[in-house]
Length: 279
Image (cartoon, rainbow, N blue to C red; front, side, top):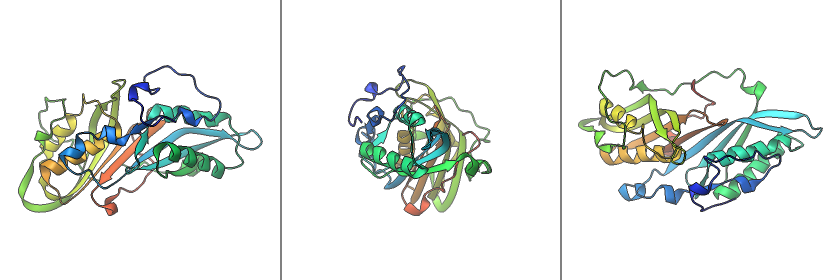
């Protein structure tokens, strides 16, 4: 495990061999303090949040060598000193495919131990069998869609917080959603797609300006978790809500999807669901 190294030293964007054994040394840590440089200086970071990962391609061998498949849900607190880089997690998880375990509980225990060692915080691990999730419905993000507005947009980067505008009148509470979000991987430049959900209580936020702001991430290079924190900080600074929650569901890449949320209030945490229609 490699806390503190530069992202350029990670396996992201490089050809690598897939392991046939579990090797926690493949996990690559990213210091949150480094990724938050500049954000914390602008305004206080949200006190509550999690990074919710879904591992769709998880398998191991039972005690007799028969393969078992499952969907893994990994929940990492945003307060952890480090996060895990996604390709390194994929490589690490592939090491389970040829490893024997007595039961799913032993698999979950190994995941918790290795991920806690990397991230410096307890990681919640849930393993769901294929049969358990077959009947689960798709669950779209609840809220008022921003996407049907008949507006012109011509700014696709850099991120422009000045597009965010809030009124000075009545206090409202709204939940707003958009499926138009795209950002870029900071290492490879590959696109990352997401549905965004924003819940707030405070001065009414201009919907046109908010959609233009979200679209301004289209050429922006930043990790998923950083994008969510940036949106939260920019909304706090520009619109001064009394309470705020930002939640993103990113489409999966390499069998993994990441669903970060950040909030000013713990009871505004979004409900954990399995997936949206694009995942």
